[in-house]
Length: 109
Image (tube, helix red, strand yellow):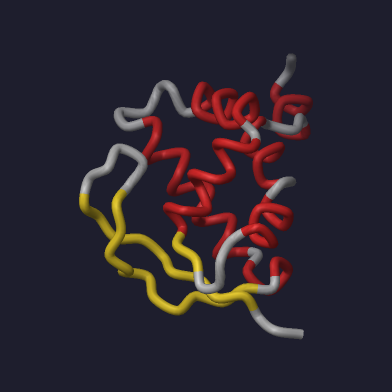
């Protein structure tokens, strides 16, 4: 595949993002990014694994994928009907390690 077609091709990360709205609808309010990623990965395992493979050349593929997913959530927060309550909410990451992540709230219509 040439460079022009590759840049227009839909990635597995794009496929995961196509499920964001449905996952947000299933989340408690407020919700954490870590909880969001866990539900996204659980409900869409093939796309999640594919997106992880897309980041396999990074030193920390999980972190790289999750950073990209969170960037996309931030960039499209208005479209998804959410706003950020805290960017440093205490939470456990996918490996159970103490960490922090974004805490989001759904915008009521």
